[in-house]
Length: 378
Picture 1 (cartoon, rainbow, N blue to C red):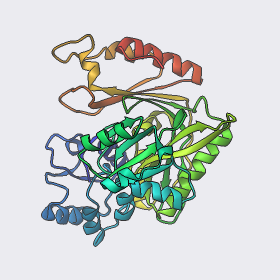
Picture 2 (cartoon, rainbow, N blue to C red):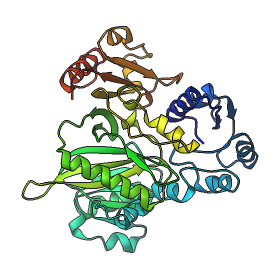
Picture 3 (tube, helix red, strand yellow):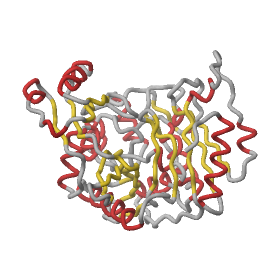
């Protein structure tokens, strides 16, 4: 379900293991649809298309968190669906997501749900300054506003169409992490190394593994929390949990769960080149009921997200091909482009992973690529 780049990389992983694939997506040029054995050109809720997908597929997964949960429930009547509709529904709603973190025993930022004027008026002043986020459909920084006081909060809620929202207290963020966990139907769960992430304008820009600024005890705690969150949803498949690292008054670091994605994640793309099994390999294994081996990081990795802005460096009116030849001359460079025909600012066009003998060498080559492409250093 879903035809984007995550689906494309899943399809490649499944095909490498000998499986045929089917993609349901309404876009005739979708990255996953272009490389799949079957491409069902229809909306996610199309009854006939869902029936056809159930006919041709032995198991169903999703690469897009906003696939309607009711469609997954329809498919689950006749086929194994992982992750299940209930878990996907939790991940689709920020309020439900935060409530679930609490049930799993994992702390998140203090928050309030704003779904009416009365709820807006009742907001605890301790939550300000904060970040107002729509409860559904917001991602990559969309549907969000930073608010300093009650006036800004009221105005932001108005601009967001008085949609159901979550107000989160603004925390003293030290850095951002993510953990990718794969969990099978038998309850076995494995995690990839903790990933340190850098976002720009709400969109992931850089991932580094091993996480350079994360103590091992904190990394172990992040992995434990991610497994607990997955287990408490009886989750099957690949799940990414994003965390904030915050410091208390004494300077001690602690983890706060931010959000989760019921699918492989942009921050895990480095696993294709830096690990012995990728996040997509484990997604295939989850679907097929195959053993989930603990992934091994065989090389330090740095992943650079490639947005459509790179095709317009220097204010070019027409898209220009980035300097791929010079980038690929750098040791350890692995270029992944997603087959999208049109480059647009903000559009995820691909990613660039660097691997090397040491974290320092890997970062140095990635910084050279940033200079060649006009990306900010990190």
